[in-house]
Amino acid sequence: MKLFLESKARKAGAAPGVLLSPEVPAAHPTRLARFSYSADEFTEDADVSFDDALKALSGPGRLWLDLTGLGNSKMLQDLGAAIGIHALVLEDMASPGNRAKVEDHGDYLFVVLDAARWEADSLSTNQISLIIGSGFVFTCHDAGEPVSFAAVRERLKRGKGRIRKQGADYLAYALVDAVVDDYFSVLDQMAERLEDIDENVSAGADNSILSDLHQARRQLIDLRRTVWPIRDMLLRLTRTESNLFADDVSIFFRDVYDHVVEISDILDSFRDMTSTILDNYHSIAAQGLNEVMKFLTLVATIFIPLTFIAGIYGMNFEWMPELKYKWGYFIVLGVMLLLFLGMAAYFKKKKWF
Image (cartoon, rainbow, N blue to C red; front, side):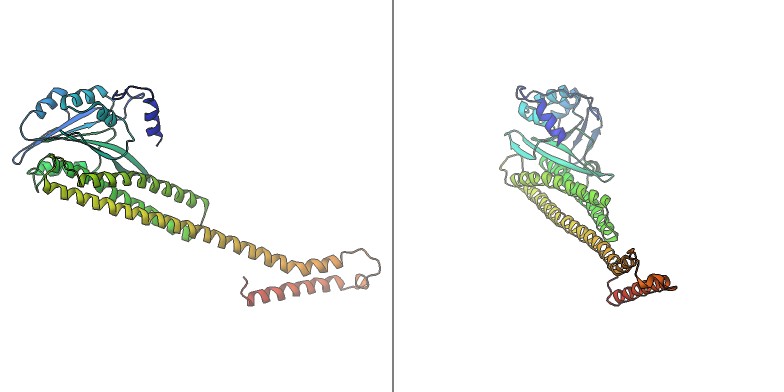
């Protein structure tokens, strides 16, 4: 959220469609990868120049261009100009934190969605932009690529299934599906964490568990805020009338939409689970406090008659017959001991402790 607000604040007053250079060096260097394929062959280059990318665009077969790192805004702008991408679309591609959406520009579709990654109990999201054209897909992302992109490349390399036999629209589906599938991995990690928190709460509530639970709730809110726009975007994709999508490919996007609906349902169940864990935490904490108060009340109740007796014989009146008695002190102590034991036995019988 902070990165998103900083990005929007920097663009305040700037002309529309202007790509601003990053204020700090990019964490990932700009790198353009090329994957050319057809039904019979596949070639790849992990780092190609701008000129080679243009040649590949005009070449035969189908093409996937993958741009990693947004530090070199000029490369993105030049490549976008060569493809014919609108300046406002390039601005969205270069700016993190955009809401998931799909825009039909006639010659190409512009798709934005967020990829999720779970590392060391930390959730991170990364904007993925796709330009779906006739015979090519251009993907752009700032941080490291989504985990499942490697699986898509492997499918292209092996040539198994329909991915190399279908058009660029099917490749776009495979990439979007890969991003969505990564959410299931994130949810699996979150489920394990919530189960650990639940077990720790049952073992004994403390402040550190409450902090972990609140952090998990915030992560669920962030995920829900990310998933719902993707759900709306995929619903629009399933209803698109673009000529870039074949009829037999649209059904696959409906399957991805069903996956996102399933993810939304799981997030709702996780949210209910965190509420239940929080209620259990407060219940256990209140039960522990009640046990402490019960113990202190029993101690105070036992000492009330003992304090009364000690108070009586602590008065400094001269004519108190028991004060002159030789065994009076020991008798009073014995009476107090008998009172203590008798009350303790009574409370034990009542199962008050």
